[in-house]
Length: 87
Image (cartoon, rainbow, N blue to C red; front, top):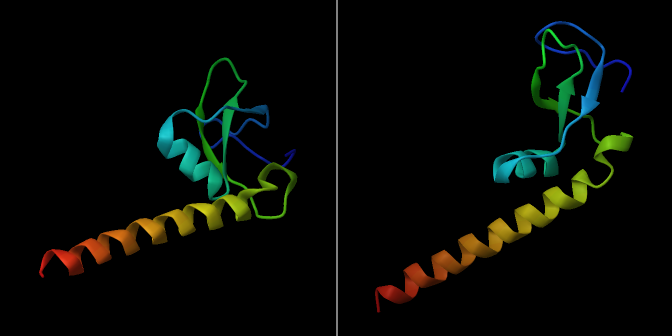
């Protein structure tokens, strides 16, 4: 985490930030991590991509597979309903 830099002010004083809302939780499951700049003049908050296999995204691959599987189930159910409505 020492090589992360604030995209707004260039400071290296970043800390982790909790995910807020569904969109940030989905992004987190896909490998993004929330951060906040500790520089008082900046106070930037946002998501930064974290490589798979690093300590901060330990379970990101599993979460991605679970989200993809749920999406596949949903789309399959919608397709079956579409096919059965025409009869």
